[in-house]
Length: 506
Image (cartoon, rainbow, N blue to C red; front, top):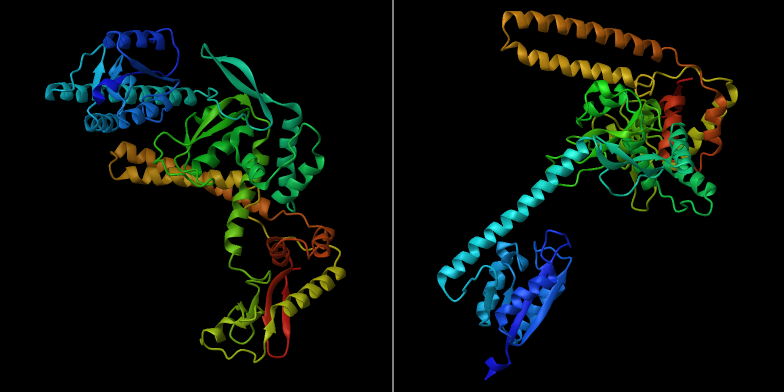
């Protein structure tokens, strides 16, 4: 009796409406022919892929099957209902459980016979193969277009807008500066090159300048993302060498890095699928973009290196409880003083030689960190009050002026390593060439090192007002900034039983 109340289900699906694809209406006509005028229910999914079963009409039909309302499921073609072997197998298992027949109107499958079921499985294998082939073709096309600098969609970076263009005869888009936003980006880079400017300070300045219609809710994460993005840089050989040394894959040859174009940074075709950290450039692909950059390479590199250095400093400072870390030493044993917290949360200094029972008994008194910091702070104020100018600061090897030379030296070291690896398999002629080339690279390295030494030895004296301005706002600056000031002013602090001795750098 129940068989009389069961009807046919006509399932049709279309991903997108294209001229060369069969329409929903045509699919229904084919399916209705199989019913011979009998009762049926139509289930239509428009705009859904067959790669999975997350389709509203399909799910509704399966509920009707499980409810005992369906006797046959009719489709125009097998791939209309599924392109996945696993999904198809699960579907057929459900059909068999509820005694539902499956009919493909154009392929004429009879699921009541073993050969019919086998043919269905074979067809679904090819349907899945076709889908994966299409995906691979789309992926290859995307990769090929990205290597040529085509606009690949997605959010337009802040500071730019889109402009229609033609590259190699293909219509696409490229970035052009949005006057006001591009000016904001330039300000960010310029501000961040200042030694005492943090991401938080840039955020406050941008929010203070915001007007109606302009982004107001700036955050340091977004500012950092902008400062790291090579889309803004005028890519020259310094940029090429930076990314090469970071392990990135440079798609364009060095000769194209002429200091004009921005650059796209892609994940990389052979990426393992894991989400890399934002600073990890190994295996990432750098492609020159068709648009002009808006930030000179020296400024971009200064900002990028400052971000890297600040990140490393932040990671190092996690374990530090004082801005005097690394400066205090025991007068008796020479070991460093470390910061300890007692059970009440009070910070105090202790000789590491005494703490680990190495060879020191300590000075026999407790040195509270708050009191010591207050004393050293007052001593720095007194010292600055006596001086008009600081002595020349020691050369900073991370100074942006010497960075290009450092990159060149590292690049030449890498080339020397590669040449040495080839020596074992080289013939006499090639050995002679390699030796000459290595000699030339060594000479170039020496010349570059001399330039770095000249720059490092010619640092101008710093104005005392610069340091004093930090001292005056000591309570509000970060522990990192405090340590930088201490590094400039103080060489070491010796803690003795009778006195505290400060060796100054000035």
